[in-house]
Image (cartoon, rainbow, N blue to C red; front, side):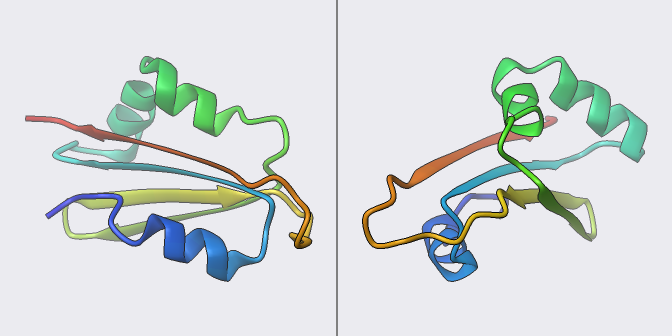
Length: 90
């Protein structure tokens, strides 16, 4: 099942102050998925987040996850910002 389950845990383990995540499934190719994310306000916002400097994309069968973070290490007083969005094609 496609979900953001454990996103908070991945974010906390990253040690960064800002992380974003997009997930999807059911697209025929990477270009189709990218265009769908670009045409979705929430997904596009995640991909264009100004503080993001490190990004990774993983695929597991039809499932794709985009996870990205800033370069700053989190301090105990830092305000944490976490955003995520999913885009599953029926």
